[in-house]
Structure formats: structure tokens, C-alpha cells
Amino acid sequence: MTEEIIIAGFGGQGVLSMGKILAYSGIMQDQEVAWMPSYGPEMRGGTANVTVILSDERISSPILTKYDTAIVLNQQSMDKFESMVKPGGVLIYDPNGITHEPTRKDINIYKIEGTAIAVEQGNPKVFNMIVLGGFLKIKPIVKLENVEKGLQKSLPARHHKMIPMNIEAIQTGMNSVEVVNQL
Amino acid sequence: MAEVKLMKGNEVIAEAAIRCGCDVYYGYPITPQSEVMETLMARKPWEETGMVVLQAESEISSINMVYGAAACGKKAMTSSSSPGISLMQEGLTYLAGAELPCLVVDVVRGGPGLGTIQPAQSDYFQATKGGGHGDYHLIVLAPASVQEMNDFVGLGFDLAFKYRNPAMILADGVIGQMMEKVQLSEYKPRWTEEEIEKMSDSWALTGKKAHRSHNTITSLELDSYKQETFNHKLQAKYHAMEENEVRFEEIQCEDAEYLFAAYGSASRICQKAVQLCREQGIKVGILRPITLYPFPTKEIERLSKQVKGILTVEMSAGQMVEDVRLAAKFKIPVEHYGRFGGVIPTPEEIVEALKKQIIGA
Image (cartoon, rainbow over all chains, first blue to last red; front, top):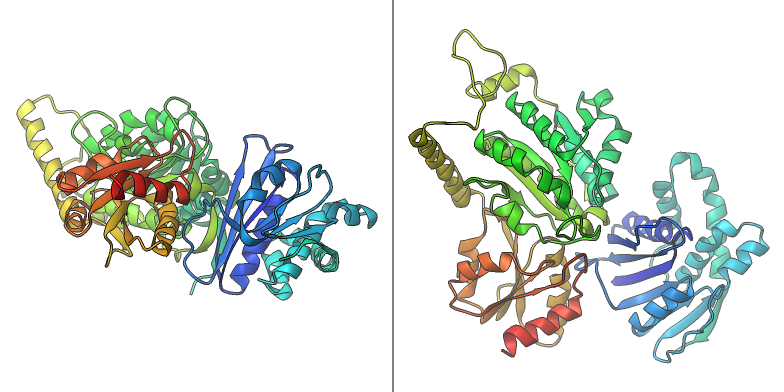
């Protein structure tokens, strides 16, 4: 199994940390992992994306142009990455800030109202975990228990008290997937 | 077995330095390798192993501090990125001329000048052909994974001390910024003063002893004949490196009809290109030089008798391609494909380049 994922949005949306949690979860189940960030010189507001690869085999290139899954969190990323999903692959997006819906018919497209749900629950920060939960529902490549272990590894000890909240957000996301296009 | 961690290449350089018993790190921040010193400062190894970490006022200062520590037989290192490494060239040729061991990490970014902060491999010439003035070489190791960032710190120091010559880890922003699984080395204690005296008594400045005359560290010799004799000695050392220290990896070369030659992150991208090629029935392999100096000339010559053509893939306008052409002795087509200035080639581009420049040519 090899899963090549791009997560893309604005800097500050938690794009890189989503990727890190996925990568750690992969390590927890003895997979090979790579996490390759790409961002401009600016820390916030600019575009940020991260390639995450989980595989049972040695990982080749961390630089890719075709992905099994694209997780898209803003319009710029939709414009850039919709075309880079492999035919038959998966596109997941949060409609918040999306002005042009994806149009491809040869891929599976899912929508997760991560931002809206997070705001509704009064905790906008966990929106990325809701989206991650949606992804894990669609592609259960890592077990939830390994995500929890991954969170323990990737978060400093002083933040461990927030792990249950994040797991809850992931579970919320798992129940919030809307199908836009299914092959 | 040591714990498996998820770390950035740059963080691993710092961790590996502490664990291999490095005595001193001097550096000056520059993107994309500032995490090396940041990690060291956060780890505070001076409290743990006694290792000194110091931010110098410039790269020129860093490399000359390395010279001073190395002269005392200490394990000294610095790290920087391309513009900073250019500033260090005077120090590096003096270190080579004074036969001092040290480790320099270059996380290359696009140039020339201040250039870009994105990854590049455009400093191959500078790293492998001397860089500073005079007939000298650095030992140059090119990691292609975060694990090798760990492994090559210890290896770099071992080779540097074995040959009393500066060693360089030539990485780039991809390997420096990427996180992968890594198994960190076990801790090795720093050398004691007694151990340094025992190992390096013939040259290191450990204080004049009753049993020997004083040691002198210099790269100055006003007598041309003596300088020539010294240069012969250096050349003999480089010859020994070429005989004994060439390291490389062959990937899917057994049945290869074509070959990619690529190092570092370009070799990783080529691995994907190999997958894509083989799905299309094109039998291609990769020769990945691990030591860029000494260069795997004999291995490329051997493979050049097996394959129909070689494409070097570099994040530069074509530098290593010259050494590959020399190794293949111009008997088969050797072409270059590169992206540069901070742009990274894609696997698909590389496949197209192989078809156009080698197979279809």
C-alpha cells in the first residue's frame, strides 16, 4: 500500500500539522513515511501545502505531481491541485471560501463542512481535525488508535490534555462527509 | 534498538552531532538550514555532553573557529547554505592546506548570489572541485534521505579524521526540510584529552610534550620544492580516498538499458521516474553517487558498457554531468536534464527528458 496525499490551504490553517499527525500515525503502524512541506517565505496568510506519503515500501520521490488524495482548504489550492488528483483518486474539500466547485467527473469528490461545524461547536481551531476525520472515513489508511498515538508523539506534553478534543473532532469529521461525485 | 522518530533532516544533523561526540559547533543562521543551530540551542548539549554551540558573527568567523578547534584535535563542525559556504571558502582551503579534519554541512539553495531560499544542487562544482584556491578536495557525502543525514555526520567525522581532511555533507533544502522516519545513532562519548593526545599526538596542538618536538599547524610554505612535496602528499591522500572510499548505490540496474545518474533529492525523484518508466516497459536504473568526491568513476564506466545512454538529473544547469561524461569516456550518449534556481524537477518531466534526449535521440 502506498498513499500519496497533498494537503493544501493557507498558512495558519494547520495544514502542516495535519500532515505531521498523519505521518506519525503511519509510523505507529510501522509504515514508511515522508512529510514534505512547501511554503513561501511568509509564515501566515500565504499558501502552504504538504505532501504526505505513507507506504509499506521504501518511499521514492517526496516531490510529486499526481496524488491519490488531495485535501483542499482554499480556492487557490483547488485551482492548483484539482487537476493533480490521479484518475479514480479522491478530492476532499472544505467549502468555506470555495467559490468554484470542483468539476472533474473521473475522481471521487467529497465535501466536509469542517469550518462551519467547528464554528458551530465554538472551537474553530479543530476544523482541520474535522477534515482529517473525514479523510480517514473515506480512506481508513490509519487506525484511530494510531492517530491517537500519533497525536501523543507530535504534540508537546503540555498540549496532551487537548488530545481527547482532537479525537472527538476527528470522529465528528467521520460523520460529516458529503458525497459530491462518486465513481 | 533505538527509537524510530519523525524528524526534519536539519534537526537530525544537530541530533547526530551531539550523539557522535562532536566537541564544538559554530554557525551563523541562514535559510534553509537554520534548524540545525536552532535545534542545538534548544537541546543545550553543553549541559549534557559538554559540546560547545556558538553563534559566530559571520560564516567567515564560523569556519575560522572550526580551524582553531580542529587544530586542537577536536571534533569541530559548522553548517550553512550556499552563500554562507561561499564565504567559508578561504577557511576551507586553509583547513585542507593545514590537513585539519572537520565537518561542514551545506544545505544548498539556488544561486548565484543571494539567489533563492528554495532547494538546489548548483554547488556541486564548488563542493567537489575544491571551491577555494589550490589543489585540494573535500570529502563530499550526498545524503538522499533523513536517515542518511544522521548516518553521514558520524561517517563524515570518521573520514575527516582518517584522512585529516575537511569533509562536507552536501544536502539541499528538500532533504533538510523533509521529515522522514529516522533511527538515531547511539550516543558516543566525546573524546577525552588523553584520547586526543593518543590519537593525534603527531599533529594536534595539545601542548608541547617532553617526548616530542612542538607541533605546527600551518598552510604556509615559502620553499616551492617543499610545497610541491607537500602537494604530492596531498595528492597521494586523494588517490587513497579514490581507491578506498567511493560509495554509491545502484537502483534497479541489473537489467537496465538506460541509466539515470543523480544524487541527493534528485535521485529520490528519479526513483519515481524509474517506476513510471518501467510501467511503460522502459528498463532504466539509477546510479546514485553517495560520495561526490571521491566520485564513482569506475562504476559509471562499468555501467556505461551495459546501458545505451545516461541521463544525469540535477537541480542545476549541469555540473555532475561533466564527471559522468568523463567516466563514460564519451562512448555512449550522456545528457543532462535539470531544473534550477530553486525549481524542483518532477518525475514526469524526467521521464520525458529520458525519452527525448536519450531514447529518441
